[in-house]
Amino acid sequence: MTQPADSVPALLALLQREREHLVAQFAAIPADQRTLPDGAGGWSAAQIIEHVARVEGNVARMIAKGAEMPRSATPEELQAAVFTEQKIDRVRHRGTKVEAPERVRPSATLDADAALAQLHASRVAVLEAFTAADPAVLDGIIVPHPFIGPLTLRAWVELVAHHDARHAEQISELRRA
Image (cartoon, rainbow, N blue to C red; front, side, top):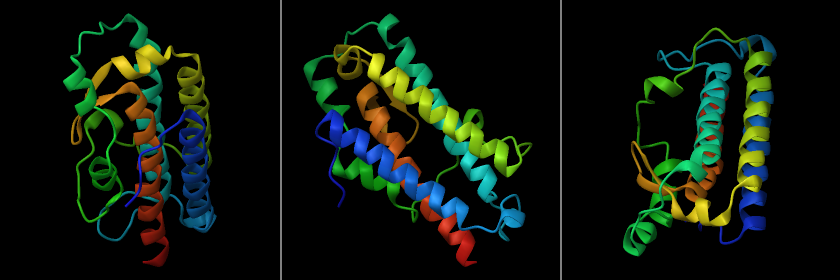
């Protein structure tokens, strides 16, 4: 089981490691095949990258707006909203299929290079928002995830890393197919 990141340096290292793995899996797909959907009607590698970038961009915007949100959660609610091993497994495990909400589905209009550029821009945005945020906001604001349940903003940042891992595996599956 993967352990939750227990410090800012550990979280930043996790983000970097999982992003490098995702990009490496994408790079392993031949350039002329990156926009081809999988045979089962699923997303192409470029669409997966666009989806990951959309999720991460939304997380960056949530963090940026966090200072404006009320911190009214009880200690029990805050404790329930941290990332746990069980939540990590739900994100990373590809055996559990989920339908992405419309707002984070890929547009299917980006080529592979544009999707990758969007991915890099979303990472810059989330890191800037995370490092600029007050730790009290990161740990005191709860935003529900559609499948995981309530998460603190700090947990949302960790979710980004585990989401990268999930989709790195998906791209690996595409490559093997």
